[in-house]
Length: 180
Image (cartoon, rainbow, N blue to C red):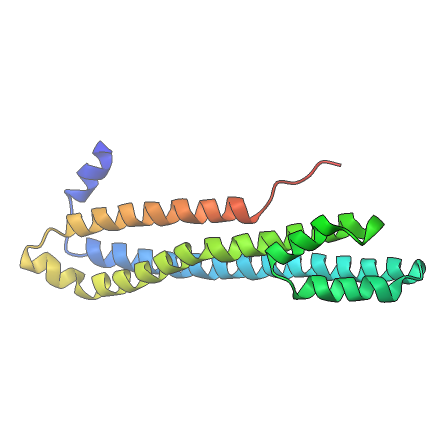
């Protein structure tokens, strides 16, 4: 902490320009990586669900109960997460219950990602805007005698909070690997 205070006390005319320029580029890169990560994760979960759906249809065809399972599956697909849980609790699909439970688990993972992504995206957007503004006025602030080190310190704290939220998102969005 003392080292950070030492660095912040040695601000030059170009420090703000370099700092905010680098931070703006880093935020843009993080936003891009986060976007790719989330899209890949959603596609992966959707593929798992589609494979389960096809497997369920195949089993239903093999058991000559295709119409019964197909109607149940259409009803299941149209339900919310709570409705899907209720349908699973009621049963009625026998040996396919574990497949529908796994499907529900994937749907819950998608829902978790949707709820967790909002705050980091908002924080990144705010950070990008603030960095653009700060970059634009850094030299003016320095020459006006405004303590630029205070803005840089606040920006570092803000980005630490953002980083913690991003790490939480990643750890919650990627479930632990199950050992078989």
